[in-house]
Length: 259
Image (cartoon, rainbow, N blue to C red; front, side, top):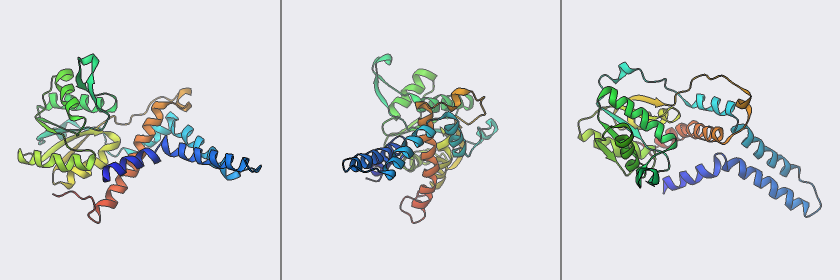
């Protein structure tokens, strides 16, 4: 129930849902007042605010700033792989249960493919075994690692629906195998919150963020809104809000990991 409520609020309040909701509320007020032959300053303000938020959050330069603010860990130093016993790759994207281009086999795409590629790179470099975590995504992750990168998956955690459950369900599998120190692969924005969840289970965590921010040359297009930038802003805002919410829920024990 908690995960369903969280996903509903995520869709409703974060972009594009939240700004659109504000704009629609404004349009409704304008129409309602217009039927009475009156103006609606509040309605126009809401409509303008909602559309302005969409425009701003879809601008690459703003998305870049939000992404940078959400990232707390630098790129992994290869020396830190020493002492680690396993690589954990987190799911977190819509799965492709049957991909025609792979003859109906499961596949991954989007942001998750970046995690898979980086996790495979680290696995080949270190020789460490791999665990993939995600209720819907794990089959596609396992298939992509083997098919696209030649990396076999040692463990599959296929029950988790969010980051809290990623950690809660993966930790017993790892501990049963004698693993106490992991390399945690996920998006750079997500790494801060994910590392806290896994550390809460008693595991020692080496953060391995994927998609680490790096300065890029700005052009005219950096100020022109696009769908990719809106997606980037949404992911960053989710993490900027998510970590304080994680602490808030963990403090009274509502959602606290068991070491």
